[in-house]
Image 1 (cartoon, rainbow, N blue to C red):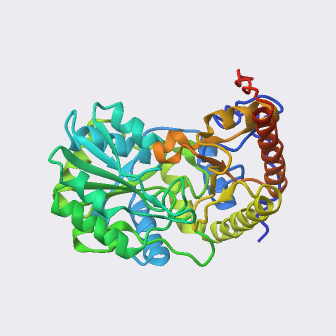
Image 2: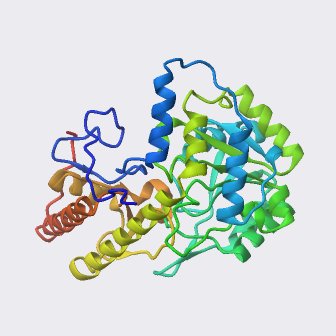
Length: 401
């Protein structure tokens, strides 16, 4: 079936957070896609909307069954119904876990560079971020286990927030790596919150491994956050789940989500999730193939037109992690120049942790023609920034639309 990923979608005027930008600007920052969702999901939501009554919604058996069947088929992991708890989103679930499973002033470990909202969930709740930077050899990322054990051994450290696959670097974590992380966290009584929202967005032929599946220690000491929203472009629907095998942790998390009032679905949350897991597979496979084409297009462009910017190889997500160390130490200024001079709106890497400050993140979940426009703007903007530097001028800051 032709899902028309090539068709540009005009999202201006739809109250889109991503597209509330100037008329000539091109936003390639926040992680939502510029594609229509799977037609099967669209049709399911349309039918529900036509009913015309939008009262309180229950969580049906079909929701549990659809998730369990999907994970068994797609990820070779047999979930039990009782492990699953509905929540309105992955970020609300993480923030709830921080609030209710740790105490004020305790330390929470992040393997950086990592999703910037993790920092907000920690700091906004009065806890302390401990960055454990990933190792980077110029090509790929790994875990510094010596440093990780040091920070986990601190009695004030009570939680690690893990990202699998990893945003922004696009890494699918190996079983052996996760086993070691799980063993260390178990040894030092540090609970693991695993954000696995990008798990469906792997390159064709690549599969992610659920953290809870790799060992008994990982299973007993983790809370996994999952959702169809990232893969099927449903962020605004607010439908997610936490998966908690351990009954003690599950009781804690279930009560926490309920007292935070993020455990009840809106009128479309069940409809959309069930349709995604039951009928969205072919669309998702088409999407993954299209995103992979975009990734290869970007890689070829950078190698030929912008060799000073290195694309970090990835196996998952639609987010490119651009290594700009050859031309700049801190991309904060470069990000501003790109937007001011070309309208290209990217994310500067510093917001993902200190070790990300020489990088940019670029969202390529868009039509090929839009990606080509974005790459040309990137080339033009980098040249404008280099010209300023060569002339000894300080680039003027971006002052808004």
